Image (cartoon, rainbow, N blue to C red; front, side):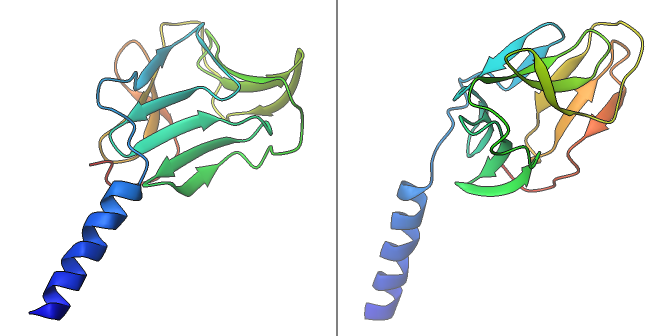
Length: 138
């Protein structure tokens, strides 16, 4: 009985200490929109964060599961979803990271999904770029 109680208490503490990105927070951005330093897209226990060290990181339960490896490349970085569908990190106007996809001008949407994957969709709702992460945000 005591070990069950201890296990339950540990599980509760882990859930309480995990960062929660409210389901009310924005989990998508459209082409032409920008995430500035320290801003995030959030969905429950997932956060897609533009850090102050210029690294874009996907966190799940506070643990990094994907990043751009662009840390240390600036201190005023911002993330923009371009009208051609390319995701770009720039520091004072200088590109420091770009996603592999670049298409025609369109209305693209980047979405942080329930399954922990970040996907850029074109106007036909076809996925054109993915983080290829598959972890639950709930």
